[in-house]
Image (tube, rainbow, N blue to C red):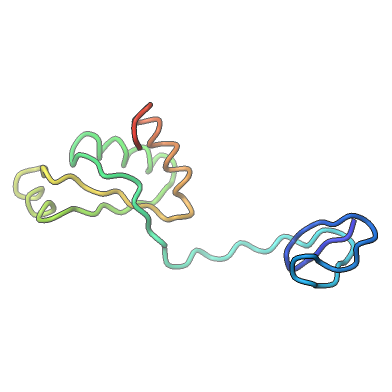
Length: 116
């Protein structure tokens, strides 16, 4: 079957050029591209959680599954957390956009039937 190595699309026999990019087709599928080194993270918000038990549970699940994360405190929450042990402002948990779907599955485990 002919393949477009630019679009990585397969075509039926007899087609000679890609319908999307106009490129010439060649026999056989394209070689897999090497995975790029992880560069600067595109962080996305996974969830806003209570700065306490819920944050600890989610952090534990992410660590167990080798998903790096960053905590982002709101307002003066980080300072209050240092002084008082926790903050009423809560905390945002951010993950790399490439890990987001796996992290959402873990969050669904933590919050079954919840809003995520």
